[in-house]
Picture 1 (cartoon, rainbow, N blue to C red):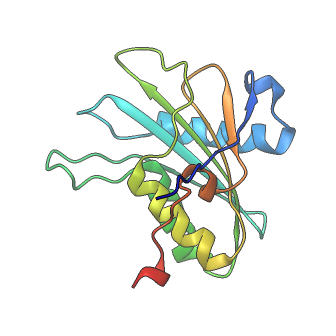
Picture 2: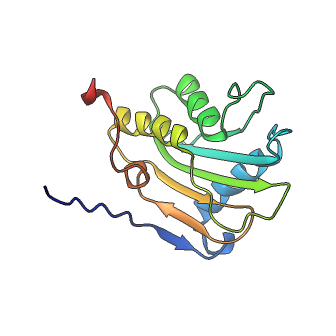
Picture 3: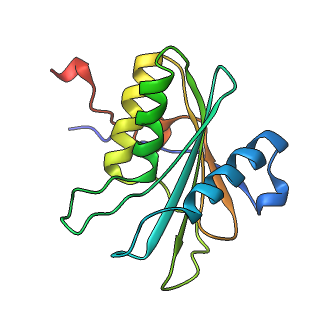
Length: 160
């Protein structure tokens, strides 16, 4: 037997004011998308914005349904829209923000497991990393240089 140690490295920005201008614009688009989320059951609104290689910014938010799990997360809403409308444009960066009606989310909220797998599909497909920035409603923002940093043991087509 041997032991395998896996480490993830993140950069942490103290708040929105510390972000580079292009990421601030992207995160503000995610915040705007979050405000339009449909989350009457969980009261947990999420917004995502994606910067594409062609300069387009695509945004999405979570869409809930009384028949769980029929809803869709913000990250997948945005990434699938980008894939359908701009199939030849690489995804460069993604910004994610989440807020709860029950409490102020001060800690960065990363993508759920299903969204990580969906993002991984696009990172593998385009053969280049996707930078991911995520935050709560307020406070610090974490940056991952790649989805593989968030999901180091990827399930991909090589397993099939």
